[in-house]
Image (cartoon, rainbow, N blue to C red; front, side, top):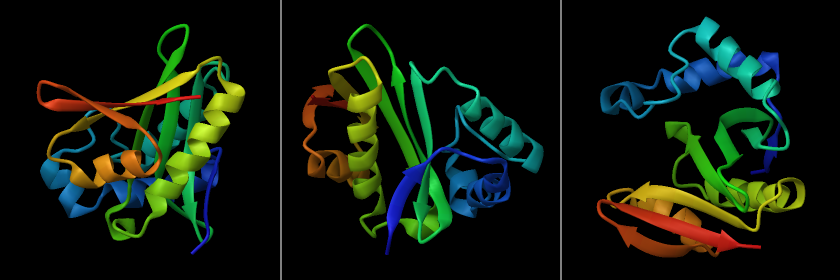
Length: 153
């Protein structure tokens, strides 16, 4: 299984939309801030990603064996840190894909963004996401019902 991350292109819209329509995601309402519920919304989302300021945002498609499998991003939040966000299509869960994607994005973010810290916020119930971050050397801090993970350059 070959995992890579790359910039989004228009041809990814159908795959992005298809991944977002999985019944589990709709039921759990996991797309609070990002929900390509129609093909047009998927196209708009990709257009937004393509035109984001590259000095503040890295929006990448997670690719598995040539197919779009999910999303990963780093967004500069202040003068020295960026927030990591990601999701993976349900059929790609539990295969080590996101661990590899996080590693790739962290390397790119430290190279291209003006930051020395990358952090991610994870719900305490999301054990799989916690393991992804721990596997990539992030350190855990507990704040109320969330864990904040930090990784330094």
